Image (cartoon, rainbow over all chains, first blue to last red; front, side, top):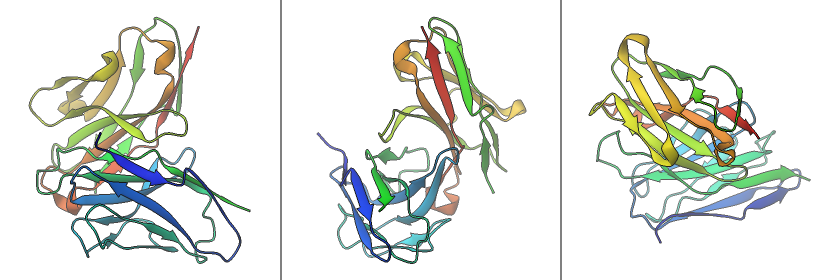
Length: 115
Length: 116
């Protein structure tokens, strides 16, 4: 079955440590997105990518980095510069070039906590 | 800039009662609108979408929503709530012109509780 796989489901970070969250999709979607979810705040866009080797900052990119070397993969690194990283992180993808009526499809998320 | 307001961060209904979750949007042009549902510790699942084909949209699990341009609203309804409907619901808007690279703007969510 096609879908989006996020791993790990739970992740713990020590102070000053960088961690990388994995997102893989086999839907053949061009566009991929990373969101951060905090209680009562909805979803906030961190980074997005329309095509391989290209990505743009979202609304809250500070302290995060991404890469898009393959169409299927869009990993997110939470750097030590992100002072409040505890949150639920969601990856999404959608068909690009099909019009903005195409919905985004979501993975099951990674919950990141600070030790 | 687009924005979405979901009225009521928490809605509680009895099993079998009507579910009404409110969503109002702000957009310079009629947008595309989406409702998603999220169960605990899971991702978002698409319930339904409005893309200008019909103002009354039917989705999965018996939910439907009506686009009202004059009220800039896209409220989600279900005639009879089930215990399995307990979840968080998100309304989202997209610019139909493709502005902002098809980004979605989400509301802050409404947590639905269903009481037996």
